[in-house]
Image 1 (cartoon, one colour):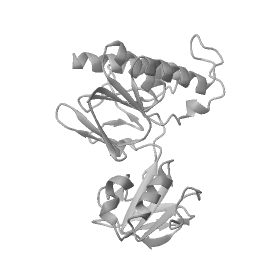
Image 2 (cartoon, one colour):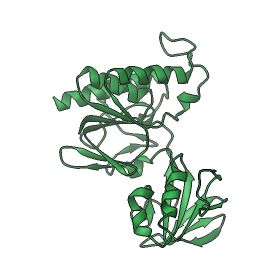
Image 3 (cartoon, helix red, strand yellow):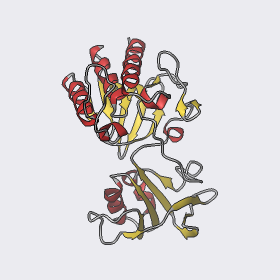
Image 4 (cartoon, helix red, strand yellow):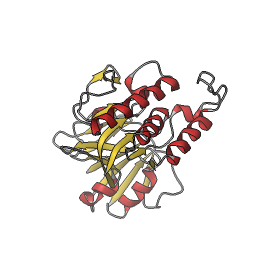
Length: 276
């Protein structure tokens, strides 16, 4: 079990990890390093480091956090489950446990499909290796919006009668996976998922698997209060869920690296103080 799990591998997340380690707390950073900062050619307003690229700045932060003992885990956290004195984090087929959580997920939040939240766990899944056995011999759809989609679709193809892949063709896909184009517009069904609407056409499926680069905050952890599109936090970066903090772009404007780093520090210090 970790003392602190940090969801998001950006400046807020690395700042939180560095300061958690300064307080001698075990910390894990979970993320993909695919945010806007990694693609910034030049960052000109970060104090002391004029005209540094976003990639170089992130690399320096990641290396510092790693050298201080923070663990790095690539991947997407799809769900966080309160467990009394700790939390379980669903990371694909793996689970991690931590005493405190710091959300540093960034401002970009995926838009849920109509029917997605209502049918989550009832035919809608974010993990093929977790739930694939439930669809043995059945026909499923894969909505591919993240890097793990091809490998997950291949896993499902060994279980399901048919896997229809909505996304760009990938040479890594098994030949049995059917690749289709089209805009996925809604998930169909009342008590359970029964199909997918694509370009106005209703297609029958027994299950729908969605693979994205990030999880929506509204499905990540029940009870999180929002302030518009952002998480509501207090001055200690506490969210509405006890034991859960947030920092960086996910807490609101301004969307600046310096603000994210400062909030990551505050969140880590507050979490460490709670842990004692």
